[in-house]
Image (cartoon, rainbow, N blue to C red; front, side, top):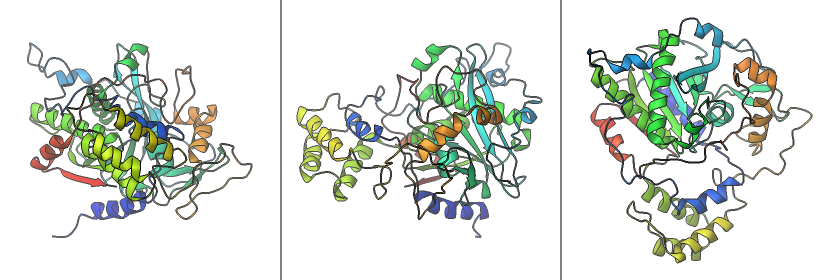
Length: 419
């Protein structure tokens, strides 16, 4: 059987991409490791394999599918979202778009997207959605501007250069800032930010997709893939699960989902957490004392409600060991200066720049850039950030999503997990 050419190109791009996954959160990294043992996200133990219904009721009394209630009129909005040219952007041979899709009209909750059509053969190549994790980190900040998107930001924070390994050589790539409160996405009902969680995110992401496809009807029926990294190890499978449910309920293909790709993914808390410390120990990044204590005294199983003081002390010791380490790229330096440069400087695979976060922040907080992206239309009372300070609570997070992966394979979906 001949290999799928799209999948072959994805293979090449994934190999390149895995060399520079840089979901860098600055000094949050060490704190993140300490927080892991406290399991602050764990409100639900075990995956919820019940169906993520978009509406509380499956069907109206008159027999109309509730599915139809989620779709708003999108006529004329695609052309409004077309981006002419971003400030400092080089010339390109593809069309790109940016804008908002409302997922809750009553609450005024809208999600921001950036979409880069493929360089070539955009009419036949698949549609791919990229999601970053956190929870609370922006797909525009990392996926689009630092990892697999078409552009990178120069060190001057003003100009862009082409990413020759961009995934839009292999697909039409859609980046979504999700949930509301992340990046440019927002809700007029600010109490929504305290209701965030896995189920709500899956529901809103599904509503986004069905409405986005109304806005871009040429992609209806197109082969569709969902991809992401880190905590998107939850987002991606849960959205895929939701799509399968609605396709089955409608007895038709609403979204032509073909597979998922997740990298550096949160999949199963118990093995993820222990495996992370084992990895750090075998790379001599934490002490043998801390590693042995974590292995002997920490219980990362879903049934653990409280860790012993010996575990907490060991995790704290490991956090101190890692304070100056970039845990997302252990062979790279940390950023030494957040200052922009007078002259643009270009990073590459052989010339890695750990300060890219600051360049992206400077660029995306410029008013002319936001205007070109059709972003921040409500003039949010805070700066755009790579990871949200608006989301304070996360209300549900299953300890494992492995049952969903089994479901996908049983339904003939392609599942690709990479590091």
